[in-house]
Image 1 (cartoon, rainbow, N blue to C red):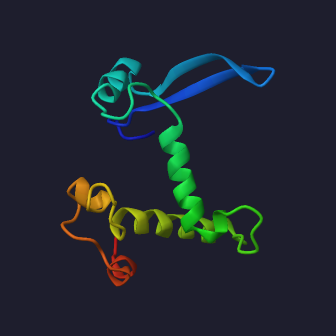
Image 2 (cartoon, one colour):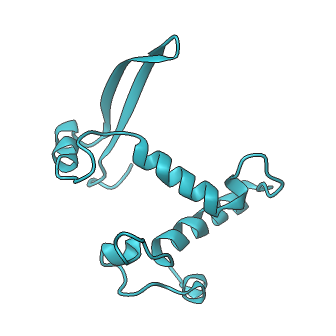
Length: 126
């Protein structure tokens, strides 16, 4: 069971002949009203949508050779794949400066006060 503060909603699109005929928004965890209240505060979107997730998936595919399409660098075991995914996500959150904000995502939410080096990331013990 996820943490009680987790809000998780899904967008279900119904298609007919390749065209979207209906869009249904559902809450998986948390209340839909609570999700909508938070999203309405966003300067970039006023509804639950998949564009942010798709953008994050693109970032991960670009940074992680194992996730690119038609690659010879595929993961040979689920454990190694998971480890590489964790490294890729941690690198993006702690070691890369966001162009628009001038800081890493970890800095933006107050987890750290500086951009981490690769050495810092690799030597961190959780």
